[in-house]
Length: 318
Length: 303
Image (tube, rainbow over all chains, first blue to last red; front, side, top):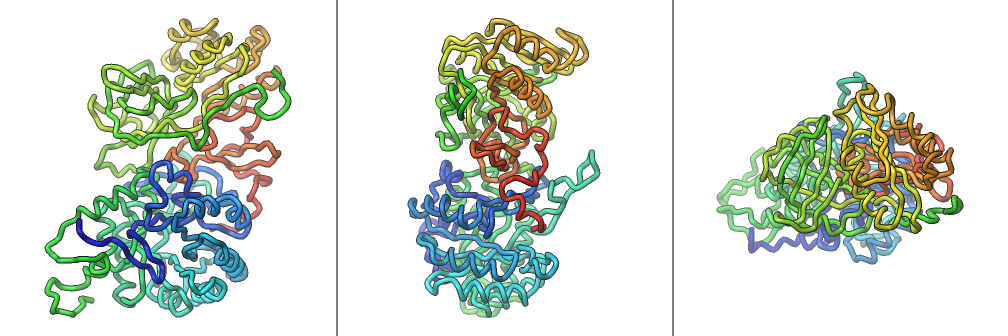
């Protein structure tokens, strides 16, 4: 793919390349910038911002599983006001393409976050974190069913200015095609597939949950094939909807797989913990990928895995 | 030196934004030293930026490993130039599979190295008396610190402790590098029978130390910080906590620390530490979420 134009679009979001960071995995941007110029990313996705500051969960927050990273940090963040005062200005000053991740515990919180983040200068797009417990349904995740996810997207889309794309980041452990449909029907411009998978580990000595929060999410190469399947299924059902693939991408080929399954861009998450310079490496490796299939632009690659080799054959395997 | 005000009298240069390098280094040697492993890595660029108290983060397991998290090691010593280029030395116990792999890595094994990371030990601006306390291999970073302190005209005493003689690191080196060395082992095999904390109060009185520097597990640092405070000395503690990435990204290594504003925050040992003022860490609350910590009230709902 050496000669392929790697620019891509996610809804109205124009990116010079398809490699983004995943929410929470690059904190404020300053940490990552020591190893990887944040302005050269397709886009920088912030940690999830909530209305009030969150301390996060007690340690241990991160554990190793075979080919995986088990994590439960608890959305540690300085709250909306702190974010707007201390983290967003740096990203804006660096002119990084910034996607701000938001999460609320009520629809009202999502609406206020959407209004204030959407109106802030230096915000290229808003990513709606749907893996957030709904205070009004005894803590079930908003993203766990189509109805609640749709309601969140409706209030966020209403309050984010028209020119700012809204991305919905879905929970993978649900009827993901149904939730995807509801998110798009209620105004999501693009879908991010997907969050970490519900998971946990128990400690060999204490025989109690390993992590301080008890339950957790699994990320890393262990979930890559699971995430590719979510992208594949949603692209097959809604090929016109822009998708962002995230889950265990560690190499250029992992990124290419996501594009072939139907993603227009990808996000790197836990790989940054092992290799904070991964974005540049993944992009370089993506360029080095070879195929007998002729492509000129990244757009030609998106969803190509669904099509048989002969260009004349339009049939899609199901 | 005054006890009033922030870091009065102590000079903590560097910080989370200090320059850091990521290089593919190479194992030069791994030598057994008592219960520990002494690893020397060729890692160009790390030595030039090193300050005592900073650490390196290593990717372990090799390219085919499914073990993805990095391991952090306080730097024992660096050499900017030499027959092999810049080298970095660390000392560790093989307490998990990743460190055991490292302990067995043959010379020439490529290792991804990030460093130096974290905030260094704050150094006194004036030539004062310093007491350096190390438990087990957590004494490793204290020797380059002792050198810097002596360059500043400080008088340096050292206390080394461990479960047994095999768990003492650097006793000979300490004898060369300091005014006086006190040794304590839990089993009494060498020196005083007991822990470093058992010998500390008498030493603080005898040496009239102005600053205590310490490395070790949380309970030891807790006791050291308390003893220093009781004697009106500053303490600089290098915490020993798991750092899943070492670079500030994963938020996995937080501990409760009281800020200048009196507010407790969960801060990252890797980015805001690993060296903290001993009187600022809420040692008894490490591993918990104190109810009065900043942002704790928002945590009543599980994510």
